[in-house]
Amino acid sequence: MSTSRVLVIGIDGTRLDFLDAEPTPDIGRVIGEGFLAPVWIEDGTPTVSGPCWATAVTGTTIDRHHVTGNDFAGHRLAEHPDFLTVLTRDFGLHTYLAVGAWPPLATTADHGPMFAAPSRLSFATFGQSAPGCDRGDEAVTGDAVRVLAAEDVSAAFVYLGVNDATGHDQGCGDLYRAAIRRTDERVGQLLAAVASRPDRAAENWTFILVTDHGQVLAGGHGGDSEAERTAWIAACGPGIEGGAEYGRLRHVDVAAHVYAALGVEPGIVLDGKAFASVG
Image 1 (tube, one colour):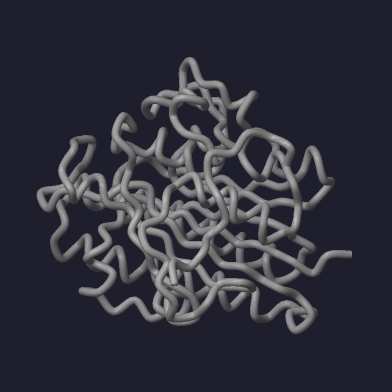
Image 2 (image 1 turned 120 degrees about the vertical axis):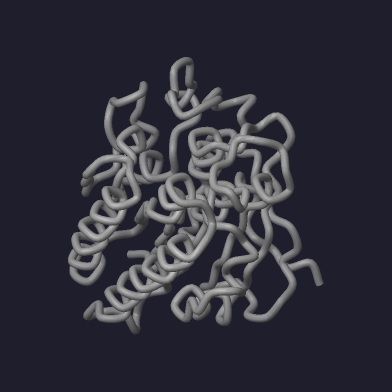
């Protein structure tokens, strides 16, 4: 039986430059043991959540998955499925999805779900406002902690949305910075849950943290500014060199690295590749 495991934490709408500006020790642990690299959202891909998350979790570009906005109408996710569905359907692995706040990732709202068939799902929504997203994040983090600490999960995706919602509601000021710090604490809870697993010493965990897009300082996104088109990936785990230079990555590399970390060949089209240092 493989001892490889992967946890991907999707942190919505979080500016790269704010990671250095705010105390984020738990995100910093992943960066310190691995890397932090910018992601440039490719021309032709709108700087909104739907297409960016679809690109990351399917490993294909917008030209293939056809998710062009936050309503997924016209998508081709059946032909280009998310990595949790592929791992469950084609390899019989136990997978887990936890989504706070944004329904189409996990439900049929707006022509979803983006994640078609994970083994297990935790979903909580209290509305799309910043307070509602905060409650959703807190609820699914609590459930994810229980699952990650005890269950035989091979791959998990946990979505945290309060940073983006706060940016929309309040701009990228003090409340946005406070949301980033709360999100960092939740990342720490998830990492601690994995560390507490009874067989943790015998397991090989890869941790991938990724944001979908940036924000303008006044709040919001969807344009072509550098602040909006700059996303990021942080990761650590087997085969990832701590302190090495990983250059600029692509969102499509996330799914590709998940498969590589688990040692599986998905047998589907991928536009990305596993993370590799540049020197």
